[in-house]
Image 1 (spheres, one colour):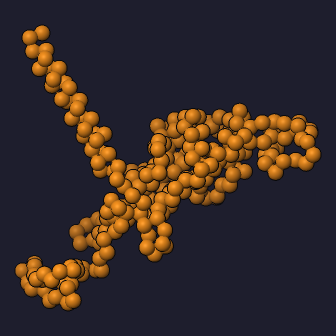
Image 2 (spheres, helix red, strand yellow; image 1 turned 90 degrees about the horizontal axis):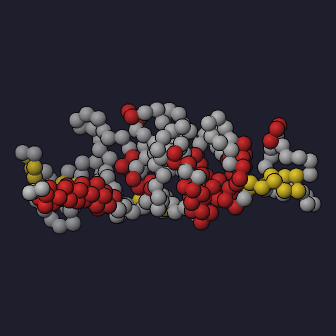
Image 3 (tube, rainbow, N blue to C red; image 1 turned 180 degrees about the vertical axis):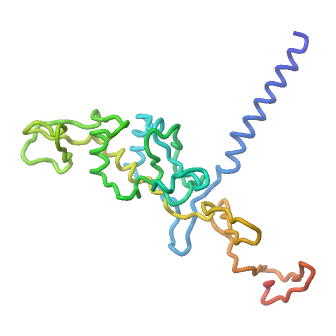
Length: 251
């Protein structure tokens, strides 16, 4: 081919630009996101996951739970996630800054899990372990994460409270493995309920109040009404009329 070199160079350039726009661009835009510090509460959000939950994240990925469960709540105008009780606000990029492998999910054969740790009615570890052992609907049973063993002495405090056909034989109990306990801890840690400024719906209509957007450092610029303040002394004028300056602020 006479122009083979130019075709190859064009294809290489197209792939490079596509990679730069999607991968490198996203890294530049979102890679520096920091936790949002709430001065009123004196705390930063989101909070890092505890060690057991981090181990449970590995179990979650090894079981490919993302094939049937998502972890992203859509805006009200894009679905009924909030009406289903899956979250009180839309998911934002800052929710995932402590996750090495973000589990957004592939489909919704099961419910969204972005806020399963704050689901109503609330779950606890025992509820989740029973669900993992028994399965429900299209969700399979993960009994390989549990052990059936003979009771020695008293019944273990970790033994599942099973009824019906799932009840173990007399003299036996079903207890979770460390992997099952870590998975339950991970699911309970999924509690993205803090209301970040960027998670609030965009104002509709001209003149609507706009929420301040946080900077990459997680702090929101402070504004009071329509007052604009500077540390240096600047002249205050604009919109075709003069504004009076009060202690360095234009009102």
